[in-house]
Image 1: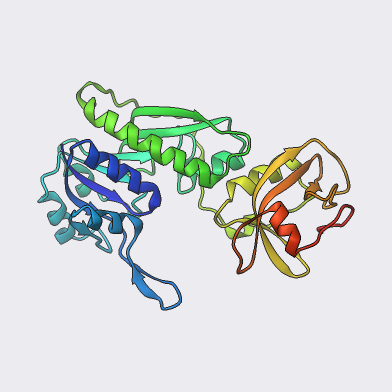
Image 2: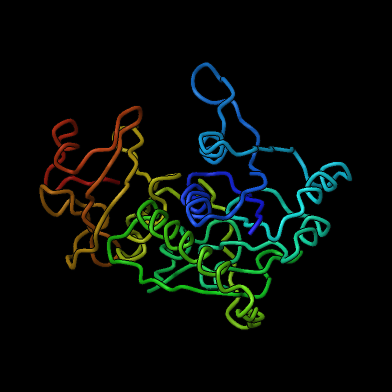
Length: 302
């Protein structure tokens, strides 16, 4: 098929690769414009931009798709379909209607659960047993369109957003190739009205750990916010990101270290911290962290 690809972050790159490998013609790649990054604040292309250029594909990064000119440029591509995954701009109706088969979105949740900006984070933080990918026919509403294909996967006990993100990216790549191959036979099923939840954008204020909360909630928050923005605590005024953990069936005073392996008592239960990061440093295992920050059994992290 002749496709327009619309995506921006690293999550979208495996999908672009899969479409090219499947033999589809990519008429153009749309992504967010380069942004200032690094110490020199030089303009840095997005991951999709860089990958598309490496593949020799035409790259477009308009600031908006609301102008008549941008919509005419899009329509002139005469695409059979547009594949959209984490693009970052709202698509006006004129864009949605331009391709012959419309715009197909790869959404990282089992819709209608977790519509919105942060479905992977929210699924882990809520303690969902499973999540997945939906191939959705896009319409004007926020992730409200009918679903063509859905693929479910369990969320593992110690899985972080970073790990689940990569798994769902690969699942989405396989799913869209499958959906495009079977497009004539797939039925777009409207989403049910029941079970709608919204994955609101992560607020950094959510990231501070309160050891008085239940261990299960704290463990899910640590894993759900890893790697970004990263759940955190402060030790001697220094912010420490908590990037991985596991639930432990122990008890103690909230915030108290129960052993010399970073097992911390919570309101109920405990969590063992397995990966941490000091400000300005690389992520470390618990053992590596303790060499630089000596914490011992009985100490309080509050």
